[in-house]
Length: 43
Image (cartoon, rainbow, N blue to C red; front, top):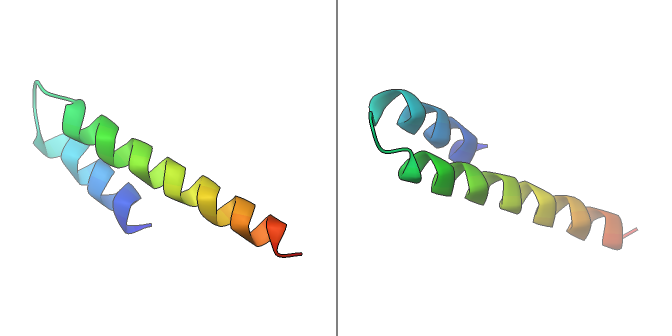
């Protein structure tokens, strides 16, 4: 969740360069998917 918040902050604060936003947002999505698959695999 913190990575998603950080991505939102980066989106509005860093102008002209969206790479930090893309990296942080991608990491947030990847982390959420890993958590989902680990939770489903444990059942």
